Amino acid sequence: MAKTKVEFVCRECGSSHHQWAGQCLNCKSWNTLEEILLLQTAPSKSTILQDLPASKVQNLSDIKSENRVRLSTGLSELDRTLGGGLVDGSVVLIGGDPGIGKSTLILQAVASINQRHTTLYVSGEESADQISDRALRLSIKEDILLLSETHLEKIIKLAKTVQPKVIVIDSIQTMVTDGSTSVPGSVTQVRDCAAQLTQFAKQTNTILLMIGHVTKDGALAGPRILEHMVDTVLYFEGDAGGRYRIIRAVKNRFGAVNEISIFVMSEAGLQQVENPSAIFLSNSAKPSPGSMVMVMREATRPLMIEIQALVDTASGNPKRVCVGLEQNRLALQLAVLHKHSGIATHNQDVFVNVVGGIKMNETASDLVVMLAIMSSLRDKVIPKNWVAFGEVGLTGEVRSVYNSIERLSEAQKHGFKVAIIPKGNAPKKALKGLKIMPVEYLHQALQFMIENT
Ligand code: TYD
Ligand code: MG
Image (cartoon, rainbow, N blue to C red; front, side, top):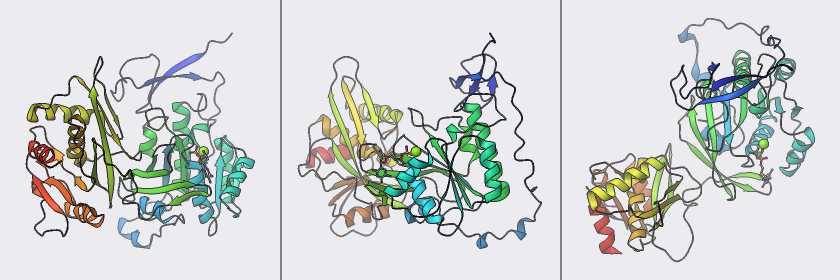
């Protein structure tokens, strides 16, 4: 019996090794080697891209970017996240948990594009019947070209004949190419398929939308280099159980990063939420300890977000659990609380949650998280019409954040009455109905809260 051949491939850089090692010899990252099985048959090298037109040399000044039109997806919110629509020849990767709505969103977008241009929807996961069922549910009547196929060479061959404006690959993990020896879904297979598809898109000026699966910890399955190869990476966020779906651009060569758009999953597909500012505030009538609102401002739009903390006596090792925030950040915040304000939590379990399944990347959330922790620890109810934002440094100082005026006017617009903010962000002009509480150090904010609740 033939011996099975194994190889170890780095998730980060995609380089292969004959032996397992704790550290990748190429990119030096730790614990990223993944065992893959190689097929025994020798590959017939993929030659499908050979007859594409060669790229030509151009003068930079001859290229006029203002003439470049962006292709609208028919969903204005998605267009905004993409930086104004799809750019010709661009490659977009869409990642997210299973069942979150990736195929639904892309089918809706493709249906709209198909009214003006030819589109090709390739599914390696579902049969044409299943896609047609979904289209029926979304009341899509457009004649989209469907192909249920996983063999990359066949897909590119068809794409060369029909010359679509947009190709959808659902999902990249199901594709196989003749040029790779490893099993479908493995790191090298995914990398090789994505590389060939990207090359095809660039050379023929076709827009390529690739759907990608995510692993348990939320990263795209397959090598990280998948993210490096493409122009734009969109991620779905939000609780799978909840109605809201957040789409975030984590990388965008043609627009702002961290731009988000919000959709609601309904009976008839994803509907855009054009004015999402306050949808993540809980509507419980009775305020309770451990909850506070902040104004998040990522990319171009402010959002009111509720942060909840639960601090309770630990039985055994104290737990620190974060949902929607970075775990290390919480450790740092607890250390600052202890060192500079004498608030000890070493015998307490601390849980922090960002309501609505949003992922908070802003350090402006520090102050709110710490106030919420204090509120839960001391059983103090923070009034529902209070907001806060501000970064807290290691010396306990409250540092200013960007776009404070815009954050404050958003809070004012929603009827908030008190804003605890960094001193450096205090506005020169008073905002009607909103009391500003500027703080220089963390303990001032904590003291203000304890005294006024
Ligand atoms: P889907 O797009 O298949 O998810 P993904 O491609 O990310 O795996 O979406 C699947 C979920 O969305 C499924 O649980 C059903 C739900 N859904 C609706 O609620 N309404 C709809 O109109 C559609 C098409 C799907
Ligand atoms: Mg799907």
